[in-house]
Image (cartoon, rainbow, N blue to C red; front, side, top):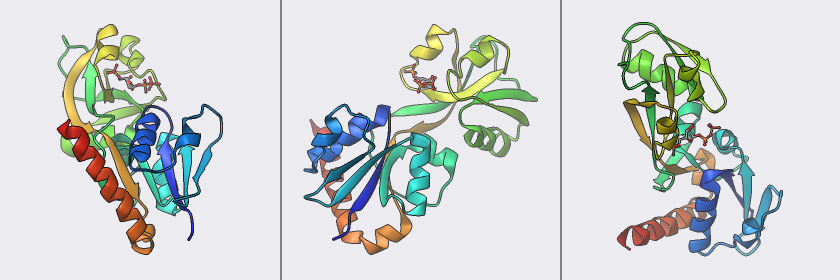
Length: 213
Ligand code: PRP
């Protein structure tokens, strides 16, 4: 039996992902140890887990270097790769929003929008609202942009709302809800259907039980 490879987004979602896989009986003990290793093996179930940067998960899965992956819907929308999204894992729930100063309503003309998600921002403003914008791509601490006049607004993830509040900003418009998703490579889903659907099925069960308690 060949190894099935699972790409997990490093960071916030990693701990949840490890917990879910542990709960369905996979051997994730080595992943719980704090090391700098990037590949972990579950010999019994012939699985390999890889910790990759969140924005790279869709790439590994699209090319089949990973058979499946766990990644946020934000990354799936932004990367626009060709993959099967088979399950909403519900954890990591947050929203993609347009944010700025509450006292300044969203201008309807040309504006600058700072974001880590240029494709999502362009799709929302250009395609949905028919508004011309200039996207300014940043890599983090996006809330700074309106504070120093780099942009009028930002498109960013809001979870608790704490970052916005502590920087005097507010949600102006909600773009969409987000959460972690299980994604699968198109060929893998055909070739390894039984093993993959077994993992999907068990994960679904765990999620249902969690919601009932
Ligand atoms: C994310 C996001 C917001 C913040 C939202 O940033 O970009 O800044 O979390 O969370 P909150 O609503 O609970 O405050 P992240 O911490 O990933 O860091 P970054 O600034 O490097 O993007």
